Length: 516
Image (cartoon, rainbow, N blue to C red; front, side, top):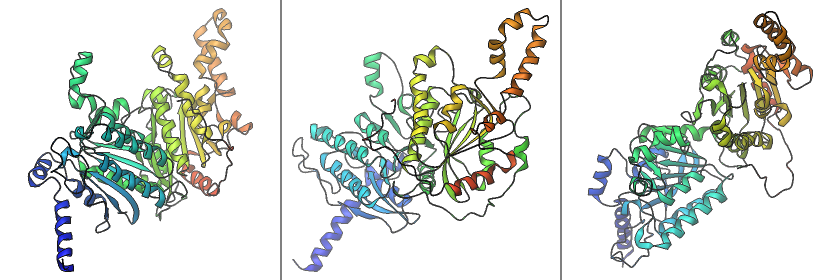
C-alpha cells in the first residue's frame, strides 16, 4: 500500500472516530439541548489547542453481539489542550456511543490522561455524560471504575480536579466526581444518584422523580454534592474558565497574579456605616466582601448550600485568595453542621494548592439544639477547626462584629495559627453575648433587684464595655490591630504582601487524622 493510501486511510479513520455514534444519535443529543462530546471540548479549550490521545482505542468485549460493533474511541474522548493559554488535561464522555457507558478500555483511556496530568502538573477536567457501567463487560467495567477512583485519590492535592456533570451520572459513576475538588451541574439536563427512582420506590415505597432525587438544584441546596449550577452548558463552561483562573496548575505552584487596575490603597467610607446600629440586626457580608476585593468581583462556591457561611474566590491587588465568611443574613451567621463541613472542605482545598485564606468573621456561636447535636455538630465543628489549624498558607482574619465562644476560636483565631488578625471597632469578642452572660453571671442579683429589667440593661452595658469589644483582645495580642473599616482592603493587601513568602514547617508524619 502506497504512503498516499495509508494517509488517506488514516484520515478516514479519524473522520470515523469524529462521527461518534452517528448522525441520528448526534441529532438526538442536540434535541435535548446538549452538545456532543467533541463540541464541548471545542467550547472549553482554546481554539486549535486540543491534542487527542487514544483515538483508535476500541473495547475488547466479544460477548452479547459486541464483537462486530467497535466504534473508534469507545465512547470517551481524551487528551490535552489549553484554557487561557494554560495546559489542562480533559476527558469527555460521548453519550452517542453506547450511551457513554464505561468499558475497561474506556477506563484505561481516562486513567492514562489522569496519569499524564499528574506528571505534567496540570488540572484534570472531566465532562461527564454517561449511562454508567457497560453491562456487557460485567466485572471488567466495575474494575475500570475502581481504577479511576484510585487515580482520583492519588491525584488529589497534586493537581486541581474539576467535574462537569452534563447528563446522567448514576450508580458507582458518581464516586469519581465526588472525589474531585469541584463539581458543576447543568439545571434540567444532568443528575446524580446512587440508585434511581425505580429502585427507591421498590425499596422504600417512596415515589420521587429523577430531578427530585438527583437534579442540579437538589445537590446544590440539599446534599452539597455540587458546588455550582449553570442554566445551560455554555454558562457551565464560562464558570469553569472563571474558576480555573483563580487556581494554580498544581500543588507546587502559587496562585496566578494578574495585573490589577483597582488601587491597592482604595478607601471605601461606606464600610464605616455598613453595620446596623443594633447588633442583633443582619447585614450582607457578601456586600462587605465585594466592597474590598479587586473590581468588586467575588466568585462564590456552594452559594445554595449552607448559606450561613460564604466561601469562594476573589483577588487582592491581583493575587488570588480563598474567602471564608459568616453571613449574618442567614441564620445570623451561626455555624452548624453543613456550614462547618462546607468551610472545612474549602479551607483544605485552598491549603493544598497554596491559596491564601482571608476570613471575615461575624459569628454568634454554634447552632444549638438536638438536631445539631445528633447530627454531629461536635465532630463537624471540629472539622473546620482542624482545617484552619492544619493550614500553612497565609491566613488573615477580620472580625467585623460578633466573635463569641468556641466559634471565635474556630474561625481562624490567633490561637489556632492565624497570621494576622484585625478587628473593626464594632467587634465584640467574648465568651458569649451580653444577654446570656448577664443572665448567668448576675442571676442572683437580678432576682433581688427592685427593677430587674432596668438593672439587666445596666449590667449588659457594663459587660459590653468590659468584654464585648476588640480592645481587650488587642491588649493581649490576640488581635493585631483595630482598624477603620474603610481601610480594610489596604490592610489585607499589605498583610498578603508581607506573608507572600511564608514558610511553615509541618511535622514528619504520614498524614493527619481529621475527624471525618
